[in-house]
Length: 161
Image 1 (cartoon, rainbow, N blue to C red):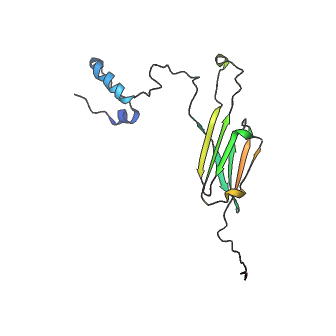
Image 2: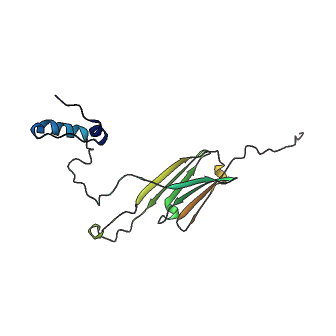
Image 3: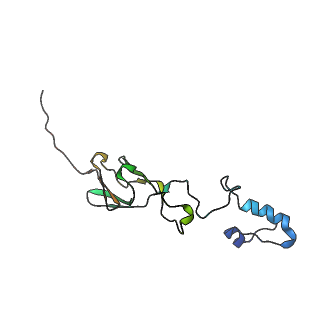
């Protein structure tokens, strides 16, 4: 018969261990700590590489005429950046390549992100994708997205043919 877990055990994922109940402890720990296929049979290494795509950190703000997206892309060549813009969304993708001239066993710490990254941002207002511009200055990517002026009016003349 299983005892109901306490609030603390449910909150932390811990289990109550009694020495006379070894079999039930193993069953509960297997249920509480499912392992992914990649973890099975493979020891966890602190230098292990991530295979997932990184998420680019951004600042998004507005001026009276533009929505501006800024992102740090230091170490990324302009040809390794891809920016796709629609009227209500921007996607920035890129790849930062690592210099592999240093052996893995010579690292003490390895915190910099290397590999592919991307970020998709839903814009708070429609923009004009054709008039957007992107510049990179000292590792800072600045994308200016001109807002659509819904208040703008134009008067046209009717021509007789």
